[in-house]
Every structure is written in structure tokens, then in C-alpha cells.
Length: 437
Image 1 (spheres, rainbow, N blue to C red):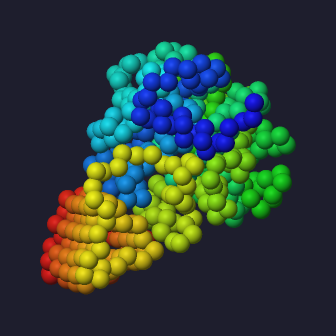
Image 2: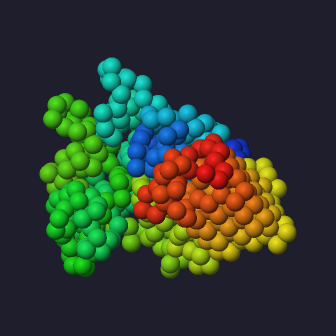
Image 3: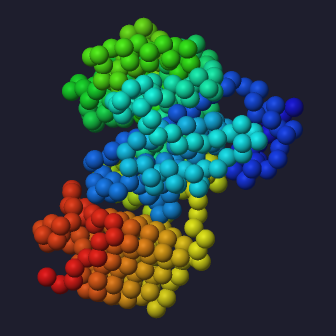
């Protein structure tokens, strides 16, 4: 029987999963493959994204107008038919837990779930001591699900990935651990965790920001940077976690301790992200991946969304990024208000103002003669008449009074208590910006 069209297959399964329709005839088909448990590490504090993380966990930070950062990894897993997902949380997790519980409601009839798992001190009176310790302390999740393979992904990068491809490559390799690697110019590779792989993709070394990064076998001017995404064979992974937990000198870190453990045994391979096949990907956004761990990177990733042919295409209907959309009317433009090369969320009103190369979230108001340029406005922001917002990030419910400028004069911004970094001004949540000074 011919293989069904990939987009139709994903669309049909996702409707069953997310809407929760009864689909008993499909249960056998969806459970006949290997049992895979996905663990998403979402406990990061995100200090480099302050003040955006002052009141929320890093994976809960809004992105792209309507999403949260965690929606990207969860969408990749669900689109890949990996629908048993545990999200490990710790730092200021309330908004993240709430988002997961309201948005990611899967059909239990088919054995699918996305569940938020807080730190519980199951192994003693301490919180998570590292990413590996987070999984070790949550070993009950692995024991209860009894998977054949365990997928461990981070929660705060922007990308599309067919995780099923990586799982299949891991199974075919017979290795105990697979690490997703993205090709980066060797001249820039000293900013990343680098994978030194030999013939056949077997990892020889795992290097943290090396001064002289190794080149690739087939491309000496490129290096493999770790994406922080892993696939493990269950038994070997559990043994490694137990060994690591007993090591008092370990940092209990996935990239710093667990992967080197497998590398030392010759049991780890790199998965080349360029080999990943995502339905609907364009030539421009194929293999796109951004670490948005800094304010500069976070702002740049938003600018990647807004061009006519975006670096990262949010409009791929064959591999959608899922989230809970607000029940709001469409965006409204009045009094010759304009938005050029921008994303404008539902419920927003551009009333005589001009928006250029910006991402405007739902329920934002930009008033007459205001200028918003290369900025990111979170939900509920108000920009008054004749105000200017330039290369800025305004968190939820920020109010910019008439005639006030933000992002124009860095010293003026600092004097008003705003965070300024690499030419980007950030105004924290719920701030009413003072008027003229």
C-alpha cells in the first residue's frame, strides 16, 4: 500500500490528538512502533534574558507575537508523532505550568500526554543540581512509562525538527546516545559546545567553547555545534544517570557529564541536522536553529520573522507551530495606520501610527503619529501619540505616554531604569513609562 502524503498524515493525526476525537481503530497503528518517552528540560532560570525572566521561566517567555518559547519544541515532538511528553520545570514555573495545562491537552484515549513535572525532592532534600540530576530525580517517569528510547530536548530554542528522523537514525546506528549537531562556520564555533566526530559520525570529543574548534570530515571550514537535543537507548541511559548520581565530583549536566560518559565508551554519535527532513520547509529556512538565550539573540530571532521571505517561516502549514490562540477580533488599522514588514497580532489596533519591521503581539494599541521600529511589543502594550519605540522589547502591559521616546537615547533609557544591552532597550512587565523628564 503506498505511503500516504506526509502532510495529510500529520494533519489527520494531529486533529485526533489535539481535539481528542475517539479513534479506536487507529490505536494499534499508533502504538506499533518503539515506545519513546520525550523529556523536555524546562527548568532554566534564563538570567541572560532578564528582565523578561524576572517573573517567568525562560521557556514561558513569549515569542513571535502569539507563542511561548516552549511551543516550538513541543510542536516538533507532536508533529513527529512523539506524544508522550514530560516537561521538567523548576524556576518560577507558574505561567509555564498554566500554559502547558491550558494549551497542550492531548487525547488520553490514545495514551498521549504532555505533562508538567515540578521538582519534587524525590531523592533527598535538594532541588535539581543540574540537567542530568533533574532526570535522575524524575526516574519514576521512565520507570512508569517503560520506554525503549528516551528523547531529551531543551525548551528554549527556535527551530523546526522532525524528531522521528533522529530517533530512527539512532535506532539504525545501534549506539547508546545520539546528539543533534548543527553545522556552523568554524571561525564562529568557539561560542558553542562543539562535537568532534570522526568517520561514520562517532563522537571522539565533546568540547565546550574550544579556542581551536575541529573541522568536519567533509567540510573542514565548518564544525558541529551541539543543539542540546539527545536520543538515548533507555537501559544505557538509566545506567549512565545512576553512575553520574553516585559521582560526587560530577556537575550532573547532560552536555558536560552524561554525553562525555558515552563518548568515552565510543557509544555516542552525532546526528547531522542538515539531514533532517521537515515537510514544507523552504530553501531559506531549512535547518534554521537559533539559541535565543541572550536579549540580542532573542531580538535578532524576531527580526528573522518579519521579512517578505523570512529566515524562519511561521507559515509552514505542513509543520505548524501550535499554541493556544486568543479569542480576539482581527487586527485593525485606522486613520491611515500602517505596518510594513511586520507581524501584528489579533485584537491589536494601529490607529494612525506606523509600525516597521516589528512583531506586535495581540491587544496592542499604537496611537496617532507614533513610530515603532525594529521592536517587539508583548500583549497589552500601549504606545501613545507621537511616541517613538526603536529597537526595543516592551514586556506585557507597558504603557508609553504621548511623546515619549524609548530606544533613541541609551543613557536616557538607563536613567529611567530600563535595561539596555547591545543597543536594545528592554522595559519590564507592567511598567508605566514616565513622561517627559
